[in-house]
Image 1: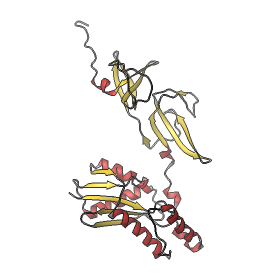
Image 2: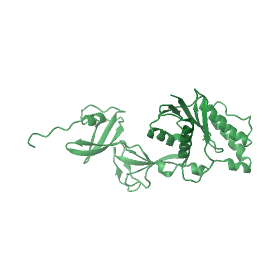
Image 3: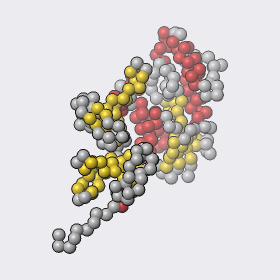
Image 4: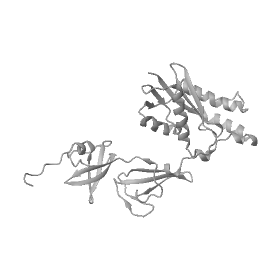
Amino acid sequence: MKEWQVEDAGGGCRAFSEVIVLACPKTGEIYSSTIPLTWDDGTSLEEKACSKLIQMMLNARVARDDYLYVCSGNIFHAFHSWLNENKYNWELSKIDGLAHERAEYLFHCQAVAAGFPDKIHLVDRNYRDYYRAVEEWVYADESRLVLLKDREVRRKPVETRYVLRGNGKHTRSCLKCGKKILPYTPVVVYRCRESCRKVRRYFHPACTPVEPLKSKLETMTVLWTSCNVDGIILHAGKEDYQCAVCGQKVLPGEKTFYGYLEKALITGHLSCFLNKKEPSPAPGL
């Protein structure tokens, strides 16, 4: 079994391609690739990175029982999902050592090959100053603007700003229909920045103007007093609720079922609802 590191460099700089690296510190094997400055095939940055990494893994002959330590950066989100779907052994990790050093070195080599002063280096992970120096050098000469990344193709689609999730204890107002979104029911949350302020808007799932690409909604149907009750699953907050099944207090952080039977909120420990048995009907009924 081999252990592999997956790291990137250059994502925070407006110029030059992002570098992605797959490395095995034990054997010294290093595989690298770069993301194009632009493309026109409609794929996202995450999809580009994932495709590149899959090919690098094939070239490296990464085995199913190998273990991968992967940077948590946004560029790898699609790759994280692919690893899960294909049942690889992996975990998120802050990457140090071989993969990190190689990624930074290769990004710097791009800049130097284009004429950037070799004496200006990244020092102690001070990316802000280093990337600023690179960008200022690029903007100083109009002929160098071709070295800038295409930010438009790297922009996440608007669908990623809409997230389907479970509403908490607060009553929201749906931006489209104006009606209430009840506590502990499904809700679509739209997140963005306006005038440098974080903004959130809320919609009933049936009212959302854009189908969310992301879902953090867990649902479940339970049998309660011979009725099917649809509900959501959340980690409990500090609300003072008792479990409808066992009668004990629901503690903050516990996985909890919330559902409505007509207008009454039914709530309790998820484990209690999973293990609950409906009483058998009396003989002859």
